[in-house]
Amino acid sequence: MGGKRFRVSVVKAHLRHHHPGLSSNMRKAVAERGCRRRWTADTRLGRAVGIIIAAYARHEHTDYDTLLRTHKLEREEARIIIDGELRDLLKSWRTKPLSAQ
Image (cartoon, rainbow, N blue to C red; front, side, top):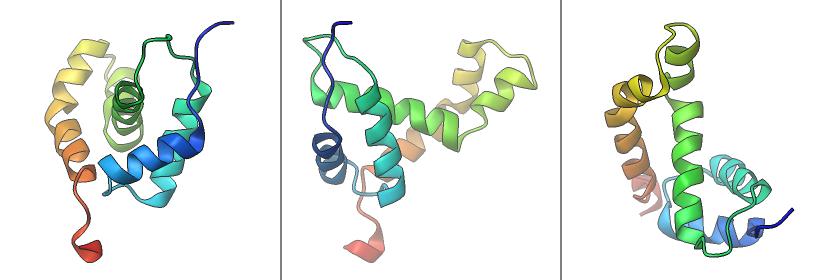
């Protein structure tokens, strides 16, 4: 099977720099997800991390899955509903926590 993979240490370093608001546990979970996936040869690290962190946030930190399963919404409908929450969450992770500043 073709495609490239990113090393966990490289993804974690990227997350530490660009998403300092992530806890170490969340950083580990996102990095491990990103490293299991095979990416096309031209996929850059930042793009891959963006895709993985958005999926992680959507599935683990919003009601997205509940909207799909319980309320039987289509993917696009559920994404529209959680869009603002998702953007706020991702923005908060790009900011260093006040306790660490």
